[in-house]
Image 1 (cartoon, rainbow, N blue to C red):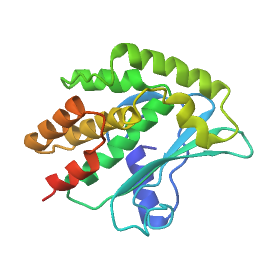
Image 2 (cartoon, rainbow, N blue to C red):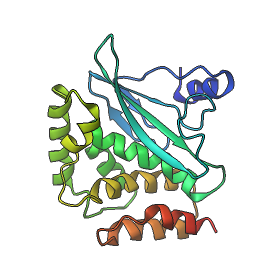
Image 3 (spheres, one colour):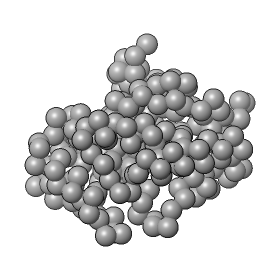
Image 4 (cartoon, rainbow, N blue to C red):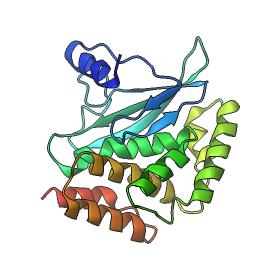
Length: 210
C-alpha cells in the first residue's frame, strides 16, 4: 500500500497511516532512507484529529519522539500544520524530513540528493554526514531513556543553528520537488549557504509568501 494511499485514507476517515519501517521513501523530498530496525516513523501532518498543532494559527512542524511500550521501538512522528498554496507550506514537511534524516542516520541520503540537484552547503559536508550517520546509529542502538535527549545526543555541533540549517536543506529539496518558483528556490538556497549563525528561515519563507 503506497504512502499516498495511506495518507489519503488517513485524511478521509481518521485512521492514522501505519508505522513504517525498513526502507522507505520520504513523502516531501522523495529521498529513500533506511530506517534503523528499532525505529518506526509515520506522518500525522494536517490531520484534524491527530496533529497537535491545530490550535495554532501559524504554520509549524516537529518530529515527535516516543517509545512503543510493547516493542520498545522508538517512534518518530512527523507532525506539521500548513496552509495550502504558499512557500512555507511546501517547505515545512521537507524541513522535518531533514531532521528525520539527521535523527535516523540518513544524512548521507540528504547530502546525496542535494548534490544530485546541484547544491552543496558548508553545514552539510560529506565528512559531517558520514560521521553524524555513524554517531546516530550508535546512539539509536542504545538510546537514552529520556527520548527528549535524543536530539542532544545526535545533533553534535558547535552552532545551535546547524541542525536547523541542515533541516532547511530538506525544505529546499521539497520546494524543488514541488515545482516552486526558481526565484524562491534561489533565495532559500542563498540563505542556507550564507547564514551567519542566526536561523531566519521561517521569517524568510513568510516574506516570500507576500
